[in-house]
Amino acid sequence: MRRLPALTAATALTAAALVLTACTDASQQPSGGTASDEAGAEASFDPSTVEVDDKIAAMLPKEIADKGTLSVGSDTAYAPAEFIDVDGKTPVGFDIDTVTAVAAVLGLEADVQTAAFDGIIPAIGSKYDLGISAFTITDERTEQANMISYAVAGSQYGVAAGNPEGFDPESLCGTTVGVQTSTIQDEELTEAAKDCEKDGEEELEVVRYESQADVTTNLVGGKLQAMYADSPITAYAVEQTSGEVETVGEINDAAPYGIVVSQDDEDLTDAVQAALQKLIDDGTLEEIFAGWGSEDVVVDEAELNPAE
Image (cartoon, rainbow, N blue to C red; front, side, top):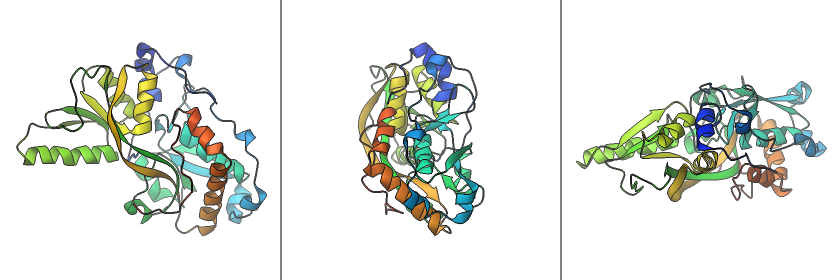
């Protein structure tokens, strides 16, 4: 398995609108733009290597088995979890590989459809069979749908190389931090900004962008002191900018990602959970994540609705 090729800073900024974007609550579509072939995603996973498990496939609801596909909602603007490749239409990323592998175990094909993040869970069971979009498992979400864990991520700050502004994650008041709109990180910074105001401290300016691509680009461009995102997304920004971004501080608030399934479809939930567990046990899921530079994040057990 190969990682994405490293980019020069100039190429990364050109490509960012297309390929860069955990805990997300993202609600944007890719902002368009062009990218060179150098910025494209190398094929990180070959679903033909995953064999159908007839026993697990037999767990599927008849209507899904007969259809032959799993319709999957995903907000494809959050690299490296899910984003659109340089052809402008093909979804790629570790979430895409994961759901493709799940479908392969079940003898199905994954039909990944770009969707606004906040519209995915409400459409599970009607428009989409599954949702996968770096969804952090929370009690609020498991009240609406079933969620099956497959990986763990936390939140981490990124700064321009060398941290020229001397940004300290422990002293947020008086800083300017970029974040993707409606992410969990956005929610966290919003509360931190309220605390700064309440305590009479300097303002924490939270600058919100519709895509993580824009956050990263503006950080490299000097318009922000820091960015805040899921730890794999921040690490990916470091790689894609060839070190123009670096991480700062520790990874915090680690929590599992989950595939979303309707609470009304017990058979599909059981089949997806079993398929995920098989991919965990045989090492396929670890291989997928390693191919995207996110080693050691795969969970040991595909749990259904784990408590926060």
